[in-house]
Length: 189
Image (cartoon, rainbow, N blue to C red):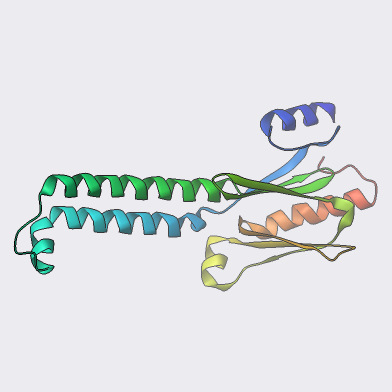
């Protein structure tokens, strides 16, 4: 158990693991959630580049009698493209840094809200009363991703993690860990 704890602490240094606690499963989001940010970034970059390459046609369509100097326009366009690319990279980074960890004692959700905002939610396995997954529609079923939902006793808090790859398998691992923990059996061995 000590070896597993040390390996988990080394592999996941941002997690606040108690003594003897180790990671059983690290769940990342499915890549399908990256489609939106990638498409929006590609579309905006394409539109900006088309505007720069078709500068004469754009200025004529806007009714400019005399063409403004292209140098500042090119510089502004290149800066706008770089800004869009940086924004797209940040959106992808934030998406990929949302993670869900199952340990032998708890479920830890690392939530990256923005570039400089991060929070962690931890739920003890003994407090989980229900765990379920949900797949909606043909796309989620075919690509095997969905949402995991955990309900806890007490204040009836519900935790959700979306875009989970293989949610049925992940919920089976989680339910087995909860049952083992509640019955005093070793978790995740």
